[in-house]
Length: 122
Image (tube, rainbow, N blue to C red; front, side):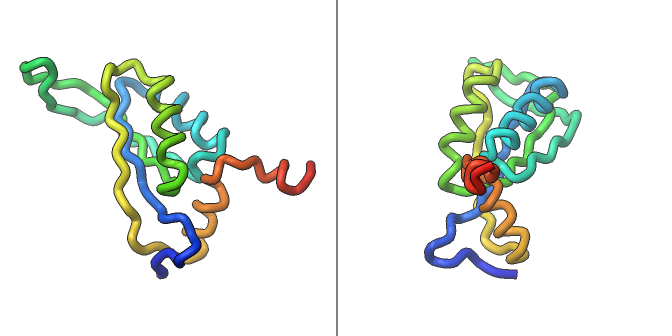
């Protein structure tokens, strides 16, 4: 395992809760297709208990675990906000301090928002 080098973007795992499986699949697929995330895991359903406008609510939600970089987090957030139906969606980043070196390289290479085919001139 390794910690990021000086010139390497830091890895983060963004957590995004969504109201249904369809939203989860749509957002996950879009983030991966745009190469803003190397992988998105979809967990759910789960129960969320939260306050909104002074009242306690409970809802069934799905959780996206978005593997990306700190550099791409702002763009991930933009995509989520554009596609999410909540007024204030959960989009938080948890730093990944250590990872298998090969996995970290794979995440970085697939979370830079650059189509690899474009880099190769395809």
